[in-house]
Amino acid sequence: MRKLFYKALNFTLFGNVFIALCALAQALLTYTLLGLAPSYTLCAFLFLATLCMYNCSLLFYKPFGFKTSEHKRIRWFFAHQQLNILITLTASLTLIPLFFTLTLIVQVFIFFLAIVSIAYLLPVIKVQNQSFSLRSIVGLKLFLIAAVWVLSVNLLPLLQSQTSIPKRETILLLLPQFIFFMVIALQFDVRDIHYDGVQHLKTIPTKYGLKKTLKISVFLIIVGILILFSLNYKEFGSYIFANLVSHLVLACLILKPTFKNHPSYYFFLDGMLILQYLFVMVFRVFAY
Image (cartoon, rainbow, N blue to C red):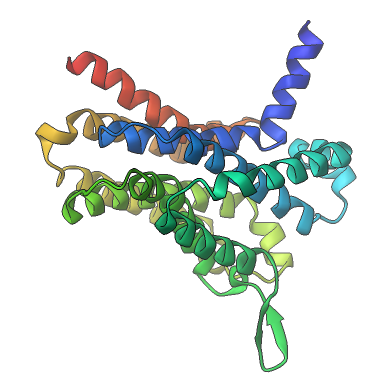
């Protein structure tokens, strides 16, 4: 039984099911905050699309020496490569009928996000006979990751609902999430500083070093907290307090060196996306 549990856990964490659940939690967070009925078709689409995206990113950029990689996730993924390819293909085929059940505006946004994602992963851009991907442009990698996340899991649910939400409320809800995603993504750039350096990718850690990256992370968290307090308290009270707690927990994860030594540290970072949703649900219960 214990062996089966660890197999299921490894599959969930290392097979990118966990990060797909994070996307699902963020979509449900948007529906909860705006008091909208969830579109289960869109939720399923976001879950499967995230799974495919993260699987493809590993398959396209197969790390050198993956069999002896220091990351257990990499070793597990390619030890079960055939299974992960099968899952990715199945998920991709399932996305097709789901796509055609969505509203036209959502389909247009998904098409745009798909193009950006492909341009991020593959060297499809050509300038003066040189091919490169968006991720190789200085400073763009972090922005693109956060933008794709916030547009996918926070904006698409709003568009799919076809409900008119005032621009101010929409911006003030999306902006803190965008910053939240940026802070989390920045920590993964820190993790990949050696790999990105070998690949000549100009990320914030490779360009400015670890100390300045830490300062930038803290600054972004402070900015996110300040934006939260600009929200209408009566309408978004539970969200403000829950997100404040989320930002503080995230700050602790970043600032405490002992946490970074834990083998599951980066899963804790991703898990903040689920925890943020759970915090909102708990605060809403106590609010009533």
